[in-house]
Image (cartoon, rainbow, N blue to C red; front, top):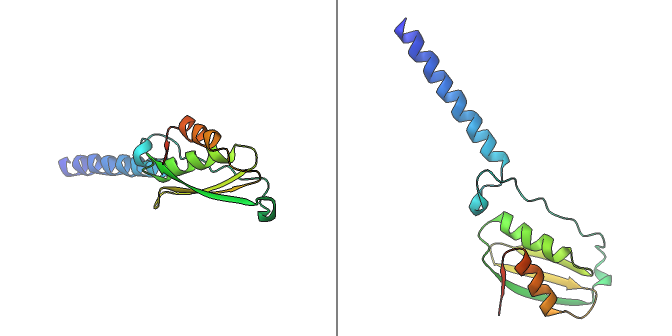
Length: 119
């Protein structure tokens, strides 16, 4: 009888641990908190490269995970005429722009997202 009771308790612990791992896999994880949902990528509406005559690269400080990179990318892509791709491995944002770059506006968007443009 005691063996059955111990087996049921162990089975309950295993099921609870499995559910916790599954829940973590669905959340954002990384530096942004294990209970925070993963940041969804905002798609750029105009993806015609011919419409973006200007290109530049920004070095971004403070990013430590994919959620961070998506936050920066979404902040930059929310600006009119900006198409950004952010890479966490290089800590850079590759920008295509429809007009000459306004560095102050780009810095402010990154700052509002919680990160910094490195000089």
